[in-house]
Length: 602
Ligand code: FHN
Image 1 (tube, rainbow, N blue to C red):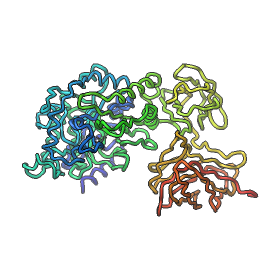
Image 2 (image 1 turned 120 degrees about the vertical axis):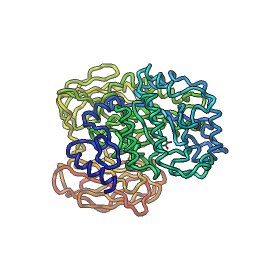
Image 3 (image 1 turned 180 degrees about the horizontal axis):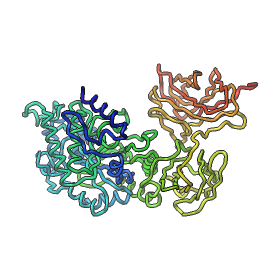
Image 4 (image 1 turned 90 degrees about the vertical axis):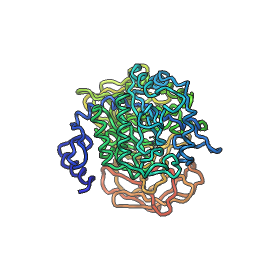
């Protein structure tokens, strides 16, 4: 039986006992046992991290010396060595120039703390193999730089002082080591050595991991660089077991193993080994359900490592809303900064951290320790919740403040205890209508980024998720804001946009679920923008009607297309309508709305 099969069968058997494959004694012949753990024990181990919701990633290494520039090109960062393909001996010279005398660990940690961050994850070794601490196992480390200090030790101490969890990134793939199974042609330093040896490499990894775990006692190890072939699930399991044995409380991300690579989204799903999934540069459209841990890591501009030419920083609004979005789906947000070779976190990054902190000081209670939203979708923002005993507190994160002073919470069925504006403590009036709970709010939002309303309800949240209803004239409006997405589609709002975008993959589709009280035949009108003709189908049960989006010349120039054929709803009930691309010749479209209008004389 193959190793993976063994793991799957063990998972099946123990799955019945509600145990999690990554965390119990494995019977696989040549794989050491993983520390035994019940789901409750795992929950306890994960608690500090799951409550934290917000972490700071730091990509710092000798690649910050060239600061992203080589031979007139300015697009590089931490992948500098692989992308320039310069001889390793030449790259090694950057270590001689790495002297970040302005580095002050307390300043960094205070900047993180001011942002509201609860843990820091810094690169102890990135793909260039350079150890940012004085490893005894290689001379390719901080010890060969003029900077005679240990930045990891200083940061660990500063984190302890400031009450922040100190955590470490450690990549598996290593372009410098002569033992990593994919030897680069430009690795002239390794050329004198014999062929790569992965067993020796794994021993080297174990040695370094032991060094960093026993020296710095990190809260978690964030593995990366797991995708190249020489790294196997078996080795991942061995390493997971090894480091959890060294420090049983350790949390380990899923990239220690070989989880499914979710293109454009990192390794979003948990996988067989490791404690949590790691979507990268993306926030999954929904979370992964209760008990599945995940964290989206994202850059603050367009690079992980320092790039002096990249001034394309995300706005504080985007960063805060990303944090809210992750929290509302039951995940964490790991926001990256890329310090300079002088040891400075660039000012625009610190500024954004400070602004995030200003928001968190008021609204942090609606982020820390919360769980995923009870709503599938909210037209004006997001929600998080805390369940305590017989009562639940729902935090409504309002991105788009209602212009008519009435915030409708669609489909909420519980009895209400109170509604309060978090920023001011103002009590708000509520009423229950056919559309859901209506909260009367002041004319202006306390915070244009996102304002929080604290809604206390009796019992666990009960939500009727189907809140699109037929209008009095029998028509049904299906706006982009209320669509559910499969694939990489995103709802785009602001700058004149109010549409479904990122429809680049013909496999992706959008759906709306709604209630029909007056059935009959309906004309279908679709409001679209495209830069080429794109064919799509509109599906309702077994029925399918086809349409073509015209070339409107601009993704922001919309045109309404009425489809030649009609759809029929035979009986009242809950219906789902889906718009799917026709794969052949698909060109991206932006879709603003679908409208169903009853056919006259129906
Ligand atoms: O290749 C790396 C990249 O440099 C960076 O470290 C990110 C952070 O998640 N991870 C990798 C790619 O997935």
